[in-house]
Length: 376
Image (cartoon, rainbow, N blue to C red):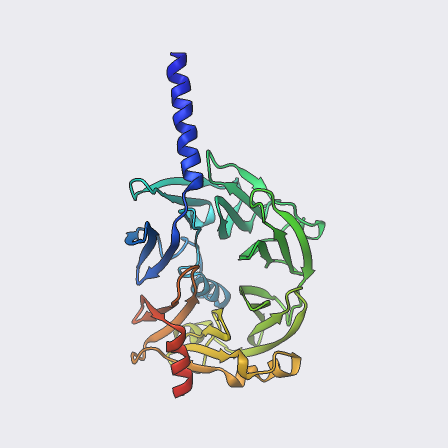
């Protein structure tokens, strides 16, 4: 009996080591309308399969409220993470759990697992480096942690500066830049951005903490992205008269270089939500690809800003809004651009649209976007 026990243990160790050593070249996970496509390369052969993931993380929101509407649009298809070790993860159950999929080299099938997050914790964003799943969100005393996905994942808290250790804080966005994990704090002023060294992903070391500037009252951060040693942060502020959205540019040390704004004036909230012309439009989300800043802008369409054509300083950014070119991407008058996304290893930009109330995705290459700008 004892011999059988040791044989079983040996087999489990072999399986665990095999899972750790598997690498999938050019693993890509991206949405195609209401489906998710997984592409991966093994021994020079490209494999493509579909995976049943939700288009949204079951987030419970109220459509009648402007900021929740913006948050919903900015999170469409933006709750999935993956790594070249074959891990795919998806936020589910209103942020209370994370479903993981491990792609196997041997049988080309997925091993699934459901991770239940700590009590009173809700995930808002995830990212994966090798076999480590980083989770940002909100809870009573926990806002940032990670799971080692190999062998019975357990919740590990990341060290958080004292400034963030009070009620109401949350990590709303995670970026992995080279060997750094960037965490963006979004709730309760002041707001912060954190940098961790994850050269060893299982042992993150905090490197930097920086207070973020805000540009109005009731500030909320919607999205952050990175390109060419620059960070871009989309936020919104509001008052009784309406809302203002801001895109801030930060240098590699998180110092703000400048920002530009989009003023939205609305009276009745339903006017904003149901307007079908260009009177009301928002900046729901942003992405940066090379020298192009892309903005999803509802009825206005996809906004495109060629960063090489403007001065990236405080005065130059003040004029940036006038340089944005918009394209509808559809002849349907009931179409809206809700979100714009990029995915690791994937050379296309995915634009999430609503056409007659149905979610659709459109893939664009850099050349497509450059041609639209040139022809405008």
